[in-house]
Image 1: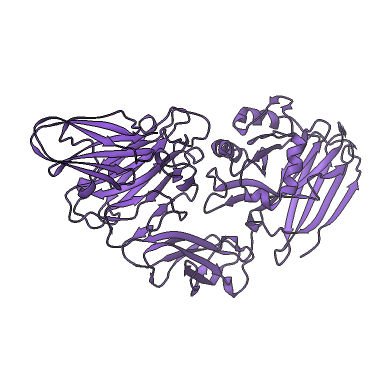
Image 2: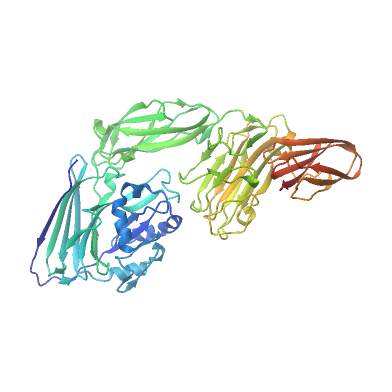
Length: 634
């Protein structure tokens, strides 16, 4: 690698005829991959910047707060001084031309405040300078050579120290999954390195018309750069006295001669009930040289890497699809990884786009025997036999500790609507269950949800008996229907009293040997939702309040302390038993009352040995059942 070398040359030229120059607007933004307001404001801000490429140079600094951001972690040294320079205390923040006030265009605060009118106004203010940027790569693409030429188009005296700042930026950085917690996967115009540092290069305070200064240097390309062909260089002139940016400029990206990538994979199932599949890989020529050969490498999980040679003829930007041999995988969750190498038998000078990783799951062709219960108490997540569908590769279902359904456990499953962008869909697939040999089937679970204001975050439950070829919606609640507590702007984590028990009739799937259940979460960017104590049961432990076969069932007091009275009315004489079932579907106690006659009946329930939490009182009358939900609180 080559050491960085700087050359600064100043040349004074006498030229009476030069006039003021067209100003290019500098839009700096302080943003972060774990900042929810950044994810909310950046799409519109990026669209506005993209519509003004001839007027605006954009440079974005990824900060070290409020959470995880690998782009900051790769180079925090150059970001922190710019944060201090502007006194930035929160993100997103986006100075325009370095000042909160610029003649003819006032601007302060978040990027959401940028408008076309403000950009046009700032662009309309002439500049006393021109600035020209250019860069080239070394033959092996491990170093960069940069030239910045600054010319005064009129006489100028600075209000305070005048600095030239030069930054390396990547125009687009894309992640397969969100690198932070706000769901963003695509980042634009990211500052990667400042030369010689964030302090910049001191320029003369007084300039005469035509005076020129050239800054040239060579430096190694940082190892953390994601894609060399996305590099461009930004230069801007800023006065420390009032922080105003007098001029800004950037150069164009430079293509890489030899660069092949694996851009897509198909034929790898999200899930399937057979163990074999045939993948295909799309290869793309990102380089300027015509691609005639490469090697496609692939593997399942951390297994042996297999290879397949590809030959053909791909011009720049062209793609080809290669079919790989059939593969097999055991029942469970897996990843399929493919990556390219040896373009035209040589080196790939920009290897970041070489690899594609796809998650998939093989499902057992027969379901597990009911009842199937899951309280997310084990640290493995998703639980064995469960898996996650995350099409956007962003935030998705996670295991939450410190909270559990009705306080009966210390863990549950969480969907972070508070952070996940609106419209994103994330699916939690339950372990498939066997409902054969029964005429009734039921799903019960506990849910907790809080709106931020009036958002319609949604949880829908769907069932399938044909390995996901078709799905039937069996539960669908959103917004005010889903919520269990009033709206709040603080991040919602439920207490023991902020849950609701849900019961879903699955009789349409009774008798089926392999039933899949999916919990589909659709974000409206509201507040968090939680599910726990999932219970898939057949007719042996039915839980439904809809089919009351003993009339006027009451349990009091409710909540129960140490004992309660169960009152019910018999519509016909029959054998009666009373069961107590906990939130996990486990039978806690049974009392056989024998044959009871028509009319009002009373039973004294001993709850002294029951722990705090949710329970179901099952009143069995012959072969039928009536259920009452109660809670125990001591």
